[in-house]
Image (cartoon, rainbow, N blue to C red; front, side, top):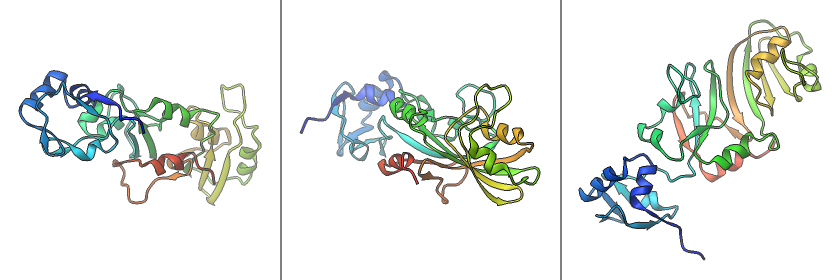
Length: 246
């Protein structure tokens, strides 16, 4: 078995957002950093980057934040934007302030618009992010839709045909599955992620979306016990579920 990769303590903690390397050195001198209960007085020391490190290393008595490779599921509420720079409330404001200084940074896996709620994934793993959003992966997303007017009855057939054109585009949508719940409520499952796709495809069908909520990405469902605005660190099984098919 190969030895675990090692990293300078000051570099690790700086990349996790605990402060500059100078500030991390100050934490070490103050006795705030402990590994297996023993003080680490020199932040220039190299430590093994074991996966159990967050269980063994403490900062001011608190467990170390998750290591790089972090993946989160977040229940996005209405009124927040999937952006680092736009005005108004941002999804990153729902995370611990220190996590917003991580390097590599956390990024959303795709986006939900300001008026769409539901399951949003975030990760600092660029390879994983691109694997999820790649068209080759065909990761399905399911949305719960509330409509302004009753369904006409032919929408499921049109959406499944793969022939529906959106305004201003030159190629039709890939087939979309529609499951009717009642006259004005349905669920749609799609594998593309075009700009405002669900809203625009119902507009193309002569209807208007009044509420939109994503409850599933791949085989991963939004947990019923995860309130709007809260997040959860994803385990390996959760990540695998994203790529699972029904």
